[in-house]
Image (cartoon, rainbow, N blue to C red; front, side, top):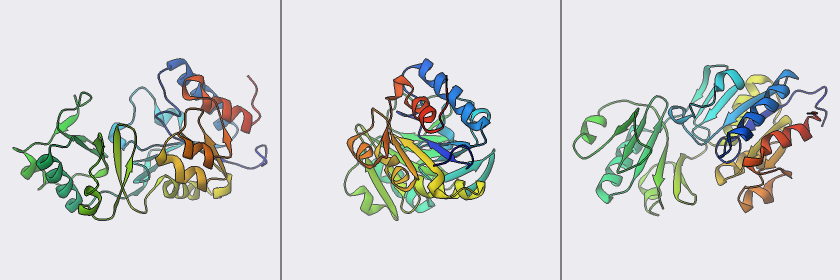
Length: 258
């Protein structure tokens, strides 16, 4: 690779990759990211979080060139939406009614709002409660949802009652994504906008929803805290998230000095 002459696009997962429990590590990551951008490369967020759930403690428009959100459901470049694939109204209806009937704690992650069913400690402020009393009214409305989340283990039958969706079960929660729309598809869309080939894309992550983009990118980087499948698929393994693994990998790839 020729990082001195060729331009690259870097795609970074948020939770467990860019951001962990140590604020100092996050700041170090962002500092190094700005050095990479100053060389003319593009650095983007690629997250399972939907737009409405992006962290408020990171000025994404200031520090990044774009965002792939909802694990590939939406792509925003320089503040402009270039792609959006939302959950169908039928899947939203089925998901809400199934969860309420079975007492499942579920979240609808949207472009503008977060909706939830059940008791979620994190649900406050802009989060909107969907319950037995108001579900029929919400089903009449048209609101863009990028992905679903289940707190705990997702029932196996849920994938069969939803149309065109796939469930990724993690430790303590499950993501429900639209088939064919992944972090790698979002990476391809964003890279094309910049005129950058996929072999000059760098992807970093730690969990199963990062697997496809790490396999598809020219350089796949696993965090030190990544799950085993990510480490096995990656071209290199960096430090863990609380040791600023993103910064360490970028410094190595782009030959940056302190």
